[in-house]
Image (cartoon, rainbow, N blue to C red; front, side, top):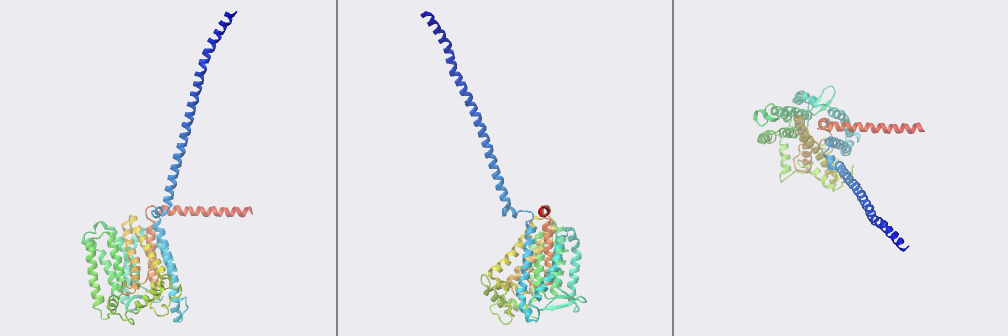
Length: 475
């Protein structure tokens, strides 16, 4: 009985021992399986986390790049920057000029027995006449401008030649630079048309032979005779200031076209000698020489040659930093000659102070920067040369006018472009700047970008119109 029980116990032990030995291995296998599954899940989780992290970093990089593109450096490199810079500065200068013409001329208009708005309305009329000219000029093609080069120069010379005939010529301040067309009572300054025509003509002539301008013959013929003809016709009427601006225009065109610096220096020196001797030193009327001596000499007659310059300085000095207020100038009460024209910058300084003068100076600098961008970015030599000529004309004349008012240059009778009163100067300047705006529209990528923005504006207007109609139908 005892042995039977022992043998049964041994058999149970042998059966239980393998089971017991297998139990730890099973548990180890289960543990290994769970560990491997945990590792795989951890790997998947890490991978997903890494992907999310990389996607987040790439998203952040994209947002950063988009923000950089929308920042001012990105916007500055836009294909439409030149276009909007030119349109904005021209608009601001034109509006500001109308305001300052009204402010500087109201008192003198009343003193002359006219309405206080007489000069302002006259200037506004010329601005309205120049506006469609600017819009049309901004839409003409390069081919059209090139075709107009020779006819425009011939027309400008013919109009300037009318100043030689007393039946048409008008004189003012010792200069015979205006003509009156009988029958329609139209008074104009043909030299302003000559500036625009010469800029287009030089662009066509020099742009077509830009690679050959290192030789004398290619520089002299036909560009130099054309420029000399325009300047000579203007000098016959003793308008030295306008002749200097036209010379600056031609110099800018030759420089951008790639003419040799030695040739330009020699030509400029030769022109200065001729002008200095024939039109300043040897004239019987020494008014110009007296004005030069009054500006740079030690003595000055404040009742004669220095009167206008002196009162311009008084106006600038009394303005201070922020001015005496718009319309509150004292020098415009008959003290400062040509307060609404050549010396309007002095009235700006008096009424708006240093802030106003720097604002005007900054607008002309921005205008010059916009035209410089067109020269650098455009591929057509005609556009480059013509834009350089217009830039030297408009911005150069502005700096000369400002220099005259502050006493750097002698008084030579040049208006401030787009700001001073004057019909012929305003309309032709608007036409020239409209032409440059048309060049900015044809910069690489600009035409496509402007068309895309116009399409986006139309879509936005259509969406807003649809929303308004939907609200009306629900009501």
